[in-house]
Length: 412
Ligand SMILES: Nc1nc2c(ncn2[C@@H]2O[C@H](COP(=O)(O)OP(=O)(O)O)[C@@H](O)[C@H]2O)c(=O)[nH]1
Ligand SMILES: [Mg+2]
View 1: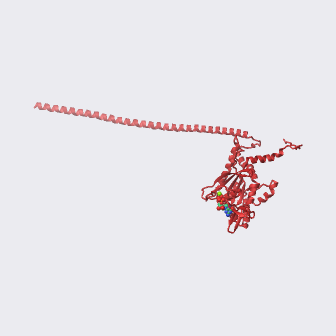
View 2: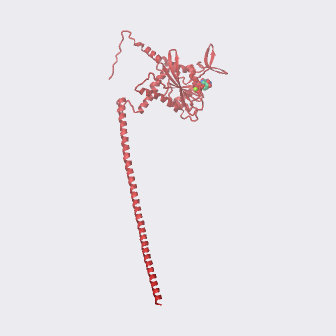
């Protein structure tokens, strides 16, 4: 059914033209959150660049080079500029690229990003949600620090960016750009862009659909990756103190556009597209994560016959499937049990039979032995009787011969 919507004219001022102002006032009151992930080898200037970007000094301790694995460390800061409050989280990849085997340098990073998305999803799925006060830690911008080798990307860079490109807004930057010459830098940028394209890595594109920023954003999109320089030192230029790096042959001013692209990065990241990155994170990257998780949990919007399925229906189907599965498992277990009992029974019967046969044999053996003993005993007794008889006979014979001899004497 097509819904017809009519355009209606108002005959006087109503007041809902204040809606954008209401929105501004409400957002200002609740404050903003922005989370940056810095990926790059130790000593690549990540911490320095963060200090330079937000014009403050965040943390002091530099990370060591000897960690056995990559760890992600996050720090959250409350910043305020005029009446706007920003809760900024900076996540650092400590130990990135320091191991001999760099094969899974990206795993810890992928896990971290997924975990932040999962935390948000769990909050969304709660019965009692508090999303308005929830501290959203999903990564809005991922600055990838490229080593200024002049030789193109390393394999660790390509692998890591490829793994992350559907999960986060990647903004590649050439770190320590003051260490590479101007001519080399142009070639280096071209090579990086070409490698990113040939590996079909999706890096974040500044939005060009809003007319007010379309022109600058298009221009800036063509200048990626920005070659940046960071510094914690200040140098007097004219009557102003500016962030700079001093060398024996001259000074590199961080905010000087002819020295490096730092101001472009700041303009794009903070002043023009911060909100877009927050939106893209929520609408694209988080949405993709959420879709994947809900699908693996078995939820779907459309059934196999292309009918819309509600959450409730899927839940019911899953429940009955689960119940059937349980029943099936129970039956299976019961059958196995009966089978095992039968097996044991036959086994026992077999043993019993064997025992009986053995017993019979023993009985027979015993009877035989007994019989042979009795035979022997009888034989001995017979011999004994014979012996007694013979003994008697001999005694009798002796007696009669003695009597005879005595009679002869008397006759003499
Ligand atoms: N030449 C140059 N050195 C830098 C730059 N940024 C930082 N450094 C230096 O590199 C070293 C490591 O910087 P750090 O910010 O601690 O690196 P992280 O380990 O990536 O956080 C420090 O001595 C910085 O002064 C840069 O843009 N150019
Ligand atoms: Mg650091």
